[in-house]
Image (cartoon, rainbow, N blue to C red; front, side, top):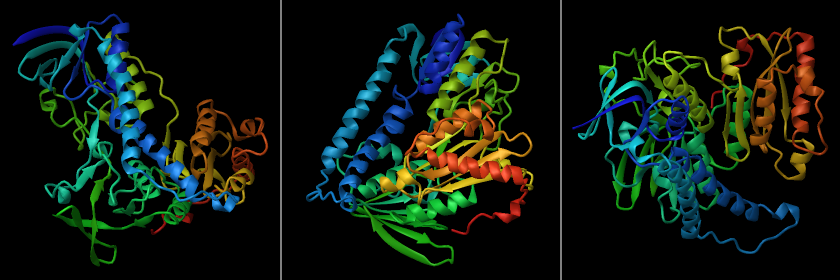
Amino acid sequence: MKQLNVDVAVIGTGTAGMTAYRAAKAQGARTVVIEGAHYGTTCARVGCMPSKLLIAAAEAAHTLHTSGPFGVHAGEVRIDGPAVMARVQRERDRFVGFVLEAVEAIPVQDRLQGHARFTGPCTLQVDDHTEIHAGRVVIATGSTPLRLPQLENVGPGIVTSDDVFYWNDLPASVAVIGTGVIGLELGQALSRLGVRVRFYARGGSIANISDPEVLRCAARVLGEEVDIAFQSEIVTAVQEGDEVVLHVRDALGKESSERFQYVLMAAGRRPNVHDLGLELTGLERGADGIPTFDVRTMQCGTSSIFIAGDANNERPLLHDAADHGKIAGDNAGRYPDVRPGLRRTPIAVAFTEPNIATLGKSYRELCAGGQRKFAVGSVSFENQGRSRVMLQNKGMLRVYAEYGSRLFLGAEMIAPRAEHLAHLLSWACQMRLTVDQMLEMPFYHPVIEEGVRTALRDLATNLSQGESTTLAAETQPGL
């Protein structure tokens, strides 16, 4: 077996791993990267980029179907499923190609292919061909779609989000299990492309929303377009020919069955940390198997092991994975000189229509402890000028600020073009602006951002009134 001695070993070549490799090399450390599967990030292969390609096709179809109220009447709309999926795959492969070019730019001696497992706190074995003695290790192994036990070994009709982007045609029908970001994005896009879609949610959550008012609004707005069965439990599934018979139990205990061509498991993702031999590292691990780590340094305990990206499950988003990788790589490269790295204001976006976005501190975080110590401002987009002009007047925005300091803390929303509103507000949050300073900023007319100003004015009024509503005043909706 080949023996290799390095300063830093990075496990995984996704966004976090590639960033960690570059950061450690920049520190002058002898560094290798190890990949156990395909080169190419989750985002490029089966995540954010191919999903946005599918969503773009869906938006084009939706525009044609809904142009009538503007007095614009299109002819018969024909959706060519094979052509839709061919473009998704063609452009997806182009994005993956860029990632592969970056991997291939890494010197051959710094790249190893194979599954890495710890054989001790500072040693790794890669398949049966290489033993690595590393001064430091960065775990950047990413995540995989969560699979439901009751849907295992059913048949080819049970799929995950990874499988969708390898379809050669659009299916006739899909059951989407889960109302998280991935499930909502794919399900709504498929529905707009003519696929019969039904969502099943175990509880009443939608994407990353924790604010009960925004959640109520999101359930109503999305429910006007797509079929969502909340409080539903998946009992069993049976493959019968080209269809899956899905058995479901509702909140009242009533069971029903429905047939779908595919059942899409979109109930979240699982960090890839369960086949790494972590039990041989001596690291303290949580109930989920993830090593405990410092979110400022990515260091696991006081060890020379760091964990970054989806593998640590802190903020499983590409931009955070890149930040994680930079911090972990810097610290692994200069270990034992471990320093806190740049952590940005949290921001998350679901590219549904309307968009769903959260940023800064969530409503749930701010309510921790039971007594609400912050003010809330809100705006509905139903009568917001630019939104009505575009016939996108659905949704609401809720913004939060601290009593006394009037410091802007965060926001949750389902709103037209919320991907842009969220950036505007997250920058204000990271700059630690007060609500009054934000209201001094320019707002053009007529733009969606005027809704932000309306919400901030409401927030400023409530701050001045010193309202202190208890958490009990706003309860989770029973969806």
